[in-house]
Amino acid sequence: MSSRKSLIRLAALLGLTFLVGCGVSTVTIEGNFPTPNISKLPLNVAVYYDQSLRDFAYMEYSETGAEEFNVQSGQSHIALFNAVLPAMFDGVVVIDSLDDAVAAEVDAVFTPLIEEFQLALPMKTKLDVYEVWIKYNMRLATAEGDYIADWVLTSYGKTPTETFRSTEAAINDAAVVALRDLASSFSLSFAQVPEVRDWLAQL
Amino acid sequence: MFEFINQCHVRSVRGVLLAALAVLASCTSTTVDEFRQGETGIASDEAVVILGRRQASDYETRSEFVQCVGDRMARGEGAINVVPEQEFVDAMFPWFEPRTAPLRTRDLEQLMAENVVAEKMSEFGIRYIVWLDGSTETTDRQGSISCTIGPGGGGCFGFGTWEDDANFDARVWDVGSLTSVGTINTDATGQSYLPALVVPIPLIARVEANACSRLATQLKDFVNGS
Image 1 (cartoon, rainbow over the protein chains, first blue to last red):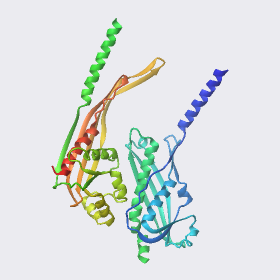
Image 2: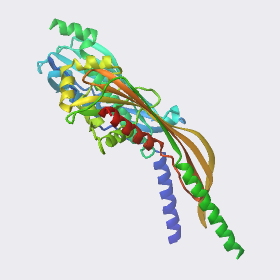
Image 3: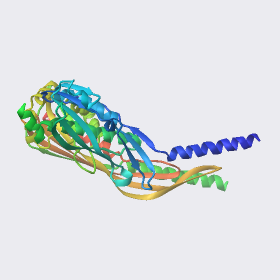
Image 4: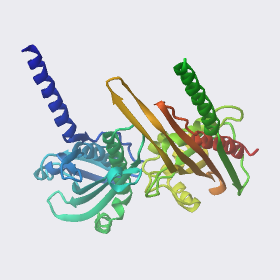
């Protein structure tokens, strides 16, 4: 009787191990983002993080269509913008709703959104690198909600394969490189966006 | 009696095979080419930063190799102050990221026109920027190893071999004159072996370590102007 119970327990454990092995692996992107060394623009800007950005997650599927990696990068994007924006503008305030912009008495409201996220794994590309590609939609409006600019920005990050590094760690590293790429191109190109440049000239 | 002789024979064959493979494994050939374009020299309060190029689509210069070269340049006779790559790139953010890093000395000239960049460069005391570009490729994989496990134990049998080729370029930029002062190329090749007689015994050709050592020595002499 006891041996039968043990056998059932063993079978259950094996079954659980099998199920865990087949399950989706969650990767929450974590990294440190340095503050950019650039000249500040004399602007007070409110930033609004839409719920879709806060909760942003990308699901990578295996070649058989099974869920493989769930890459959660919403909070890391917020951490990145919180590090970058204060270095770009004189004043930055985070607002919980676009309706709060007027009360915040800011020059503009900035709303970043993720449009697309792509992940390339070495087992699929046959290259010795993990790659992350992200497409953003950046929106800038007045406190009253009038359009100033709306532009697309892409970022790319890659990291080489290493013998003793897990796939999850490599995905995280590639995503952090992509986020740094976003920070560098956004901070250096912001004032060169034609609509933003025209708006800045009017101030 | 016959079994004892047979075991001794197997052991001696194994020993000879291993010794031969160990000798073969140590056969790594390294070639270093230097092309000098200008005079060099460095003061004791000046420093060098070694940065990996990461613009290529199918590979990138590993940060471990960059650190290896930096560590070796910073010790021994004629040691040089080397600023760690990540510390420099973070302090200079966003000017030395893969997309924004200067590709030519003309780009560096434009970059130095930015006050924040020039100030940081002066704070670190950077006299030379060394750009490392390259990777290690594995080719000619041959052989096979099979492993089995059973109630009485397990083991592997077979033989594998491959060739490693580490090729790295080091371009040296003088931050004082904003010119390229030279290039050093290192190419190290070696054959690795993996014989398996019950237990796999890896005999790895340390091509990247050799490339790092030779490149660091040559770079140190180059920067010191000797």
